[in-house]
Length: 203
Image (cartoon, rainbow, N blue to C red; front, side, top):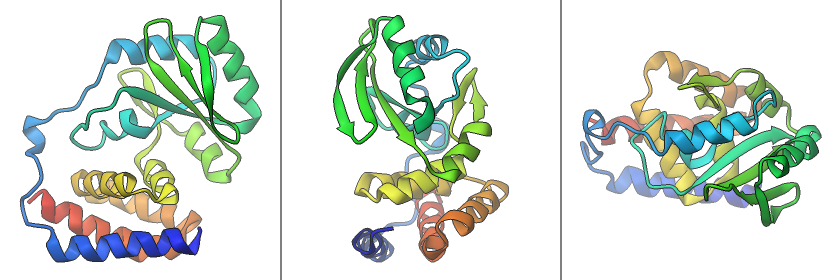
């Protein structure tokens, strides 16, 4: 990980520890999360038989109270990028442009914005083999979603991690710790801080 990203993350955690208020989060029982299941199902039908997992904002809604999102992010292996793009084209999706190397944005016939993200990392292969199936949709497992957002290092990603970990039980947290230890061990202390902050917010 970029040292500047790690320093940025640690600074945010220190500030959060200083200012976060106990019980400042939304009541989980009152903010049950769903976005637009019909849109998600349509995308899933389009990609039937391909290996992908839902990531990004739509994935986080399965692990914490929802925040507003208007697009769907999906992750595929770089070796399957061309096949996935061809499938999208066959179903009337239009390529809108490039995000970064290997990543692109698409628009479905129904108006759903889809960010196609690719990865070559070994953790991505494991994540794609072990999705969390929710409502018939392959959602990336929480430990790998945490890892993905940790590596991205944006402020919103760190906030998402904190809220997701705050809502997770100890069994799930153990799997998160194992994945972080395996793929990004230098961030373990930060993960523990984010667990603490998330639990505090949800008290």
